[in-house]
Image (tube, rainbow, N blue to C red):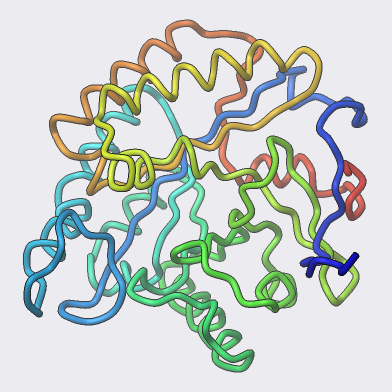
Length: 297
């Protein structure tokens, strides 16, 4: 039998039978909001589409995405302030130049700032090693201008080269969100031998696949969030788990969808279930940081 290629980052291990542990204060389900703040090139590069582009520059899709930075992000922040929720702000570092004040507002409200590359107009998976390393370094330089040093990374378009976890670990990142393969943090092997933590980030409870790809709507997506929480609460007494809720201000930040998000988050907050830890991806990584590579496998 021929051997299938393997990434070598982690080994197979079913979630049942792993060592048990708890989140702070004995909580069992860690929930965080991963809010993607993204900028795109006008008439150039990658970008999600509401409808097929007929010509370039693609004004319709560019403006649809830009709505998230101008309106949706601020609608989110008002909602999260009222619900007393801190988020993981997944920021393209070019937001700092393109949208003055947006990254600073996330920082100042106490959100964790995680790096989401420089722009979602590019994908790092096709870069050579030197180019990718330089892009990561420039991203960190951009954040330094607002006094922030991100420790988490989400690749634009969840794109990775074969070297990405190694380069992130070498650049000082503590965790990566690209690998949606588990409900618990898993330490990925890196060429240094130190390893970098993979924190769960959902490609299911994520408004781009749900709404753009599967053509669902806000009410359905809100119901998905509630269903996922209910299911994970039914499991969490047996094992600690993580739910990352992935949001984009130009999608769930639209007026007709935001109210559904508001309603479901309000219900979950009012339930005040003592098993739920409302947190950030960085706090999850901090809680897991002392664990050795692959010890949860």
